[in-house]
Amino acid sequence: MFSLFRENVRIALDSIKSQMLRTVLTIVIIAIGIFALVGILSLVKALENTISNDFASMGANTFNIQQYEFNVQRRGSGEREKINPIISYDNIREFIDVYDFPYSQTSVSFRGTGSAEVKFESEKTDPEVQVYGVNEHYLENTGTKVDRGREFTFFDIQNNNKVCLIGSDFVKSIFKNDDPLNKTISIRGVKFKVVGILESKGSTFGNNQDLKVLIPIQVARGIFTDPNINYTISVMVQDKEMMQGAQDAAIVSFRNVRGLNPVEENNFGIERSDDLINRIGQITGVLEISAWIISIITILGSSIALMNIMLVSVTERTREIGVRKAMGAKSSTISTQFFMETIVIGQFGSILGILLGVVAGFVIAKIFEFDYSLPWAAMLWATLITFLVAVIAGSYPAAKAAKLDPIESLRYE
Image 1 (cartoon, rainbow, N blue to C red):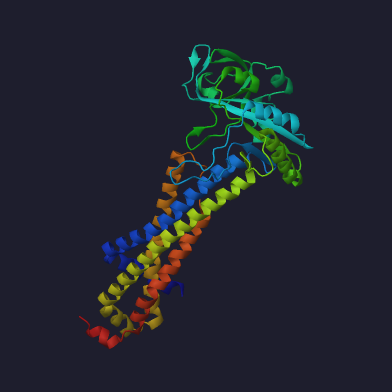
Image 2 (image 1 turned 45 degrees about the vertical axis):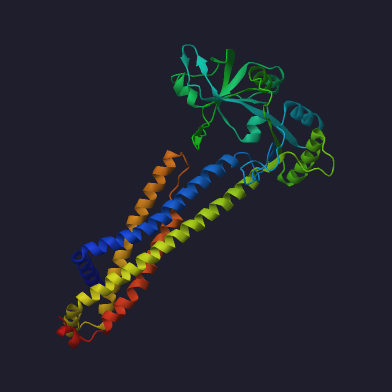
């Protein structure tokens, strides 16, 4: 039995070699469909991993009060439907005073600039450093970890100490792999003592998360004096069961801070990290469906091409089929031979498409610094789909070959 199977495989490979051009074209058509499936799904998965990891670091028991909701509606002209006022320093100061939900902690922060130049002795960075003003709860509420050194303390924030936490990229840039702890850096002429180094977070969409500096919020306000600074409020509760109650209380408190009457809509946004992750999942789900539609259309075209090439092969090898039948080959043996040819061609196309998809996905993910992982599910589906396509496309040519009359086949010219 095994020897017969091996012989059919050998004959199938010999037949493929004899009609190389048509076979290669069919393999390429199949590979394009599989490439579209594996490549797009791997990129979608990498994008989902990257964004989800960024938001998941906030924790499932954290929510933000910010200027707008995540899904801001826009008019046809591209302008926002409603212009919300920024969250000012007076807003956050009043909110902290009035909001007192049990077992919760509130962090406030703002980005002073994204183009600062940091100096250490004679070394300095390019003007692309992000500087944030934060309070003592910022690290825990945002899931930011300190790799070495210590976090900010309550006294650092209250006493406006000139201390800072720096991203991991500074170790290689201005410190030349020396230990930055307890060293002094300068930002816009103000000197800060480095008390901690943040864990590496990499980059997202070209935004380097490891080239930033965190400083006490009041010190930051003295350096960055733009009157339109927009602050972010982040609230973390210890128990996830208390999340909704804490959020409702925060909405009521911030509405009072904004002076809204009961009939007015919120002029600020509330966002939970798990809501953002769910929305990202919905978006990537649409992209996955699009990938399937594109690949299925392409694979259907390749199945027609594969069926045509096998029908041509049956016609060209009519005399060969007659000789094999005259020598005692059964109809099942003939049909198995043609099935083997279609399956071999299909799997060659599958392997080529998977390789191209994985390589393309990996390269693009590296360019955009996505968190790439091998799309095992897509690769498994690609293999299964090409096998089914080969079986379906090869059914009619194999049946036609098996039904050929040996006498008539021997007369075929």
